[in-house]
Image (cartoon, rainbow over all chains, first blue to last red; front, side, top):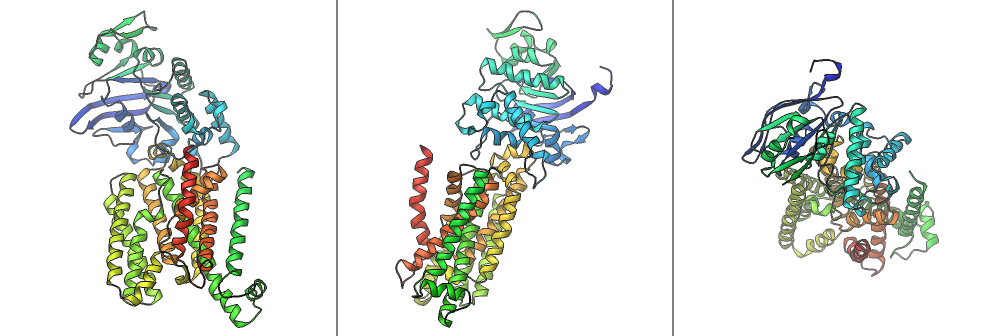
Length: 261
Length: 322
């Protein structure tokens, strides 16, 4: 692709390696995330998907290599400044004090507020809109702890949406969600991409990856990776090699379904 | 802030004021209520004035302030550890302060020297806990605190066995919580005020922290420095409270729970001031009961607090699990 205004990289990764214990899960990853792009990360359990996302969010130092956010080294940036541009949906809910869904969504407004500032009507409106987008409008006063697993997942998403970053890192966003809500939340993030955001999501379903992602990053868990357009990378051969189990593709691009044979 | 919270805070303030007045008017000196009121405003005979102005007033202020400080420390620690069982006394800092104070008593030092020993003890243990927990998460910090607290408990026992009979009584009393040693209660009240304003302004920040360490980091609060900041502030609050009133348990644990359940919110901008009011009221009340129920003897305020606190806490826990 030719360099130009629309191809400016928001997140540039160079030579990134991920090490867990003695194992090198990922070696020398280079990647540029563009405006409006949706990138899916696929791999077996323990192949380093979450660690990669955390390294991209600056939560755990990359073991070699660098991550640049809008051209600035992530490690040298204050967390608050990172938080205004980059958000992460965690894979699991952390142990927390009791919060209502609305209070939880308002947590996302933190990077936009000064230390002593209270949430203004504007922030409340953003939080309510975020809850509405994930289908939790009627649950705003319910305690998050009393919600079902899928609803808790969407409450965490509402908090991320209220944060309004430009880059959304999603760690298994479809976890705990029924098929309807899987489609619904991925549509929300696809729409955000159309509006100019960028998304990196780890997914376990190549079918969803093909439907929503532009590019896919396959992590083999032994240091190797493969990065490419969804149509090139998501083939039954590639996926069978990735998951070490035969996977067959049904239908024709861009609406193939992948099934473990 | 919703009006129901303002009403809740106003109600708590009313209770605090009522308890405070009762602490000034009731006692074992045999003053009539009218006499005590006159003495408070400078009337009445010299004995009444002495009792009300130099005994009851500083003690009521100290009780209120110490209770508030411990409650605020509890609020901070429960937000940091996201653990409803966190209590200022589990940090080990109070144990360090107590060791310092007992050494002061053993060596026959004056009250001021004893307080500086206590400050030094609390600070040393806080530093040791921080140093040992460095590089680990909140759980490691909590565990280091717990280990130091029990180690301090052992040292305290040894110190008690070294004391002679004359000193022993005062020491045991002080360890069980004793507000009669308090110096400069106004300073304690000032510390409470400053912390309250800080907690009110930083309440939203505490809300974020209470939602999880990774999540806080994602929205812009680095976990490590937040942990350090909260630990240092709550260690300081606990030390000041222990120096002011000895080892008083349960207030720091219960007051935050009481207000969370009572006002049905966990927004720290409401919880922090409400817990401070509730903690101050509870301790003032416990001291009032302690010095009147078995008069002319005094029961240590820490023991009374625990006697009230334990059943209240059990009831709360039962309610929570339902």
